[in-house]
Image (cartoon, rainbow, N blue to C red; front, side, top):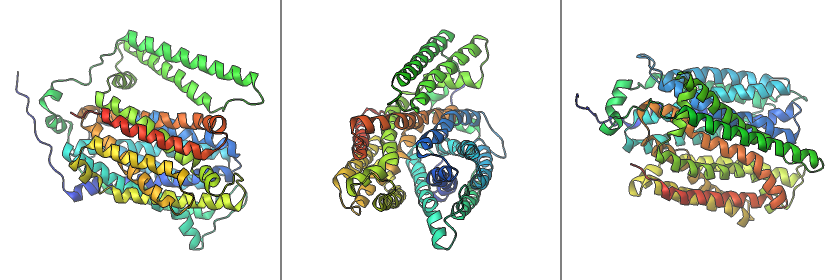
Length: 506
């Protein structure tokens, strides 16, 4: 047997780390425009306020499907000229830029809903390989710095894209339009976003080079090289058994939800719960399809992705639980910050009142603050991780974020909430970098992309749960007091922080 040869992955310079991260500025610019303006576009085209959550469900569902698929495909891709991940950066950038140009020109609600799917899918094509890109290119001791640099560009992109329509309005661009027409301030913002997205991703594509599969293999430890991570270890029986359990569970829950709503027409449960029950059943069908393919000796991408899900490294499983509680808390903030603070500070629930809308505008400013703090704190994370450890750094940051959310209930002065946003910004900076830094150390190089896609499940699933359950909690447990939902979010983020103590990094 020939000896296993291992090579130390080269240390990259600061300029090289910046070059490989610039593309995330454009990606976040696209996401920022989407998050800040899509609800406005839906309402401009006639959507009712109660319909907006179900229209938005496209975003998490698209990520749930697209990210593992793109991750799997990028793991299997190699071009001597274009590399492994960069072809997907470029394809996603072209599609997302076109979607940003066409989106604000739609004239019907159904068109806007389709464009949200297309835009989110295109952004995911570019975004998912970027996470794996850091794992591919940087040695373990530089990965915290690499993901922190991504956090910096994410913060900058989020701040600028969020305030862009406001800035254009101040420059004289029309912020109002006829019914059914998107204002010019939004249209021009999307056009600028398309240019920023494309140019920043193209910059990364042409200023970076990737290691070949053979080089990446040589960087692995001797123990990693001895394991063939492409082997399917899950049995056909296991695929079928788990698939039937998930399918039957989803079907039963869907029936119970339907039966309850028929019997309680005057107070039905939220229709968004069907997304959860159908999702459970669909996951069962996916496993059955994988089992059927494997029973016919077909080792296709579906079989590999489901098998990889079953084979998640222990570090990834420990991080998944942390991610679940973290992102549930974040969605509580994103959904209920405005109504919660309007009740707590302005003592109003009247969405048409001046006080409510002033709080709504201030929440937008506060969100800009936490993204700005996040960009600033990105430079602190590598230092803190070096002084302590990556899990301890994440724990400290999540505790700061949890206390920031809980302080929403304590502070009655809206300007003091900027202090709350400092804690949340510190947490957000760590959330965007530290889990990925810990995860990449546990992943084989030939599975980096697909596992990054699977890791996204633990961001999307709590988002779907938050969209379906937080409304129930707010209405029935907190008597409509949304500020308590924010406190719940803060408590869950502290739970996530404590769960980082379980993380073991090899």
